[in-house]
Image 1 (cartoon, one colour):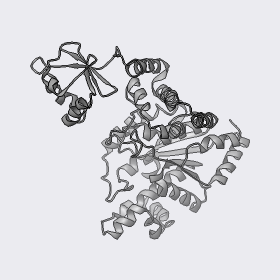
Image 2 (cartoon, helix red, strand yellow; image 1 turned 180 degrees about the horizontal axis):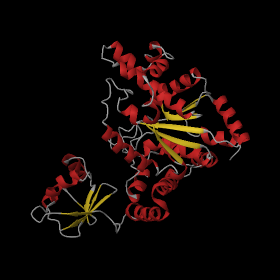
Image 3 (cartoon, one colour; image 1 turned 135 degrees about the vertical axis):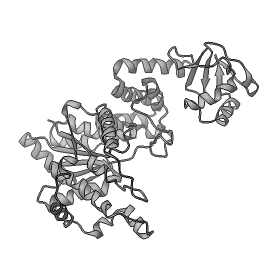
Image 4 (cartoon, one colour; image 1 turned 180 degrees about the vertical axis):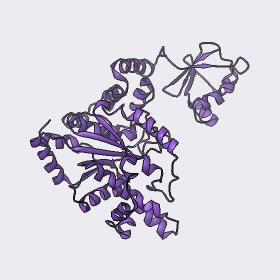
Length: 403
């Protein structure tokens, strides 16, 4: 186990807020002296199990704590998921069925172990303790918090002010999530800023019940490839952790230059000392593309391993550096009755290669569409494609036609 000072340096990398820094230093010092790991908790809502790189920001910090020798517990909110968390919404979230919770939890577990060490991770379901509370115990827990405190949540305030109904059961959600920390005797809890109220409630409840208060670590929201909005599949600015290595690599190369350091801090395990050196290199005029290329290698290697990362690098170099056609590209099988470029547009939209016909037309007008290296023009929409023709759409998308 590293000395507390070095642990603090790693833990503080990329975080948005921490409550309370002095308490954390004290916990780390006692942990180091007693050779007893801290108990780190992360609660996951089983309502949206499809994870992209933005979701891994908190998981990556958990992995760093895990590598420092601390105990990591993932709490799947199966009990709370059946009630529905109103987090940040203008109306209550629809409760999930038992079957939905189980299916989503299974998907979550499969994906989180692409970041965390499965052998060193404990997975718990909060129904283990919440379902055993009797009504008297629930009332006793409720007595530790006031209605005024619950109404401090922004979403509750807004709904109350606009006379939007708030179910009484929704008031219990932050209390139940806080009880997870009590049940686990958590030393540290991580989450995004949207979980600030619930995580701080954990500190309040632990204190009320005579436990030492957990440290609250809040991670920032990761901007997507547009450099503005938060990473989101619905906005199309995401990097999926299940995407092929060559797709992941080229997407990382699309990260805006001003976010290079942020991505190093939030979605890699690179040591702060190395990141400081990268900052110096950027300030001294090193080409951001070269640093981004290193970033793409690191991120791709985290999810695909060394062999696939090398193939992804070769693919990128061939397709986008040497301006050649890579060998292993997606193939599109077309119907012989629909073999013109115009007829292919609906298929390209369906595959997510383009968003619309108008986008495709715009790309053609901007000389952004080629067939076997030959630029297409609007008059070429009725051109018949033959087997093994290769379409290049935009700068980074290739499709081979198979009949």
